[in-house]
Length: 93
Image 1 (cartoon, rainbow, N blue to C red):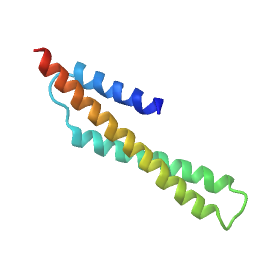
Image 2 (image 1 turned 60 degrees about the vertical axis):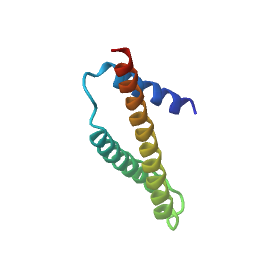
Image 3 (image 1 turned 180 degrees about the vertical axis):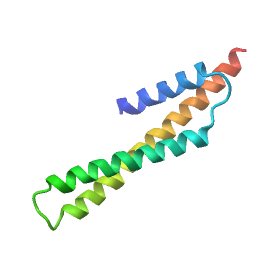
């Protein structure tokens, strides 16, 4: 839960201090790419160190999906933070 709050505050700071409006679609794409890469790396590690050969593939696939979903959720929270930061910046002017 604390990571979600930290991510939100980092997004707010990014939206507030970054001049102009942020391209949220690009941020979401970069988050998706990052999620796929990190998920594949974790899945590879899990499949290499899995003790039972029959379950290694399913465990790696589950790891890939969970890591990807987690990073996408954090990216969406970051984007919400940038929106809040932009809103605060417009209200202060």
